Length: 299
Image (cartoon, rainbow, N blue to C red):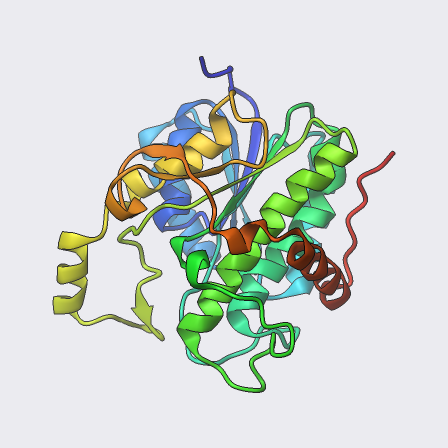
């Protein structure tokens, strides 16, 4: 049985479209208080209106957050710590996929910086609020792409060569390593907060772009037909990871269909590379050094 989530607060990064928006709609229907953390406030406002059309009584607000800019991450976290007395769910959902080589405001390779480091810093900064909220939960969106990922500690910024897909795979493996290491550390400190990771399978969202352009229509139609599921179904893994009361932390949730590309949420086993605790510890240390943000688990 799902516990009553009415009145609980959830932050969803990248909630203005795709998986994030679909998850937001479902969680609003459960009575949760939503903070849509978005880079583009115009799109955020459109998402907010879409949610309110479905759930007129929903408590939902938009706040600006650019995970590719650590000053934006700090400003967002400061506002949340100032304005909220509790935080029940943090859903680290925002992401970029296979852009041309580019860097974040802080000089990180765009995918590693946005998908991993921005969320790493955000989670650390919001941790005091999460820790003081009983049974709070951090949900990180991983990807099947982590199966093919490796962390190249000697070329994290892409200055020694860049392949968009390879760096995407690396960023999603980093999400997996971080989420699982975070849960281990929460348990070591006796926290009631847990960390869960999930992936949407392969969903038809606007992450499928070639740079700023959409992929060719024939390619999108072909991929849609055989591989993809609608964002509303892709979001089920996120909703399950955020709401299932039987989860105890450290789980990996994904679709149950062929190739784990589509279907309904089920427990999965991460690729062995995501379970390497030595790599996870090294990634954690490097991430703290790069972001200048440290995790404080309290006593």
